[in-house]
Image (cartoon, rainbow, N blue to C red; front, side):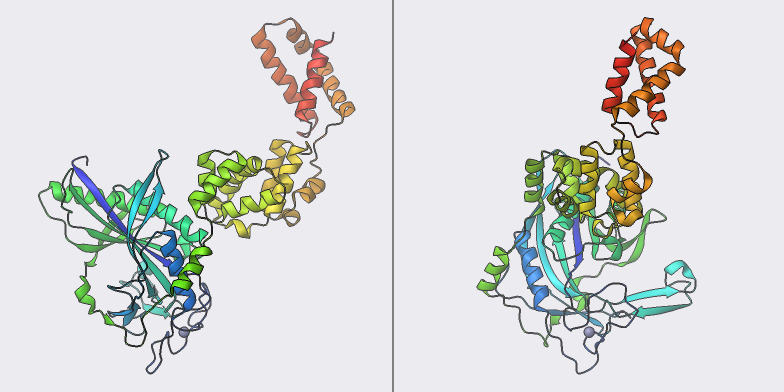
Amino acid sequence: MSAWETVIGLEVHCELATETKLFCSCPNDFGAEPNTYVCPVCLGLPGSLPVLNERAVEFALRVGEALHCDVPDESIFHRKNYFYPDMPKNYQVSQYDEPVCGNGWLAVPGSDGTAQRVGIERAHLEEDAGKTSHVGGGGGRVHGADHSLVDYNRAGVPLLEIVSKPDLRSSEEARAYVAELRSVLEAIGVSDVKMEEGSLRVDANISLRPSGAEKLGTRTEIKNMNSLRSLVRALEYEAERQAMVLEAGETVTQETRHWDEEAGRTHSLRSKEESHDYRYFPEPDLVPVMPSAEWRAEVRAAMPELPTARKARLTEAWGIADVDAGVLVGTPGLADYAETAVAAGGPGRDVTNWVTGDLLAHLKETGAMPSSLPLSPAGLAELVKLVGDGTLSRPLAKEVLGAALAGEAGGSPAAIVAERGLAQVSDEDALAAAVQAVLAAHAGEVDRYRTGEDKDRKKLRGFFMGKVMAEMKGRGNPQVLNRLLDEALAGS
Ligand SMILES: [Zn+2]
């Protein structure tokens, strides 16, 4: 592979979180009964006219700000003509040579702490198509299916297609770019960025060229990668496939290829279309988009904090590691959750430890969003306090966290501690009694401890502590116990 340089450019389709669709007032919502969010406009019925959603344009302007794009005074919509059953009009209203945002960049943090500036070619508004499901055999594919069902709820949902320049050189750089872009889109509130629900869809253009060459090789476009992991796997597979084609003295065919997650390979879908295949022409039913200077200034003034700035702020304010701040900011909803917990009284560093540790593991395992957890940020702050004031030992705190995440006692750590009787025992009399009982039951070991070599003593010390903790059913305050045990062992 080292003889070849991989060149990757990404097209990220971001579903905008507007309340209504791009050209009509139907709700823009995921998961409703099929064909309930439709009207003459998004069904493409004759005589209906589109009206542009102002909010979608505002969101595009925000993205333009965040990605340092040129925003022209005027952009227009085009019709992109192609036939597909889930596209009611048989053309898609999109933008072509005059998009709403052009020529920007995104700083992508690398693993070595430096940032790579990835060029943004353009970002344009367009409407989404509906969704076709192939059922009754064929495993979800059209071949072998008994029949197909079309759901138009998604038809007309606003998309912003963000096209990068071919600046990426590896699957890892591509992953980092999408992760950073996702954080930015989340931070500026334009999308819920859920890849698994299709709110963020990535297509990749990939080609190889001999290392050191200027001219780009023939590229393929890969579709159907619905997670960052699929993106990395698909790009690695495709780079290797193209290298084998080129090394066999053959040429790469320009085409669109489908990533098959289960088989772990790409296969040819169709020959790649050129833009003339789509017979683009200006959409006559819509006026040009001309955002005023005042509006753009308002959008700029209202821009929220971007991930890079937030990361720096949290690192500074909470004294946490750069990598942990990166996890908080880079995981949808996680930094918001942590900041709310800190606002509720949890120290930043402790909150970060829990959130990036056990809580994140739970999110990954269940696919839940932080905002939908039964354990609220205030609940986490409460848990951190229970550990801080010595009510709860660390292992028991983990148990309480697990119970709270499972929704026990309404997700309240304090209630779980009370219900399960988990509060740590710091009472010296009770702890001293436990120490005495253990030492009395193991007189032989106590003798060996008092007369033995250092390494045996260390082992025996651990043995006594384990026995005493078992006697206390894991609830003894370890600091107090350690002190009492040392005192008892030192005595004769
Ligand atoms: Zn509609």
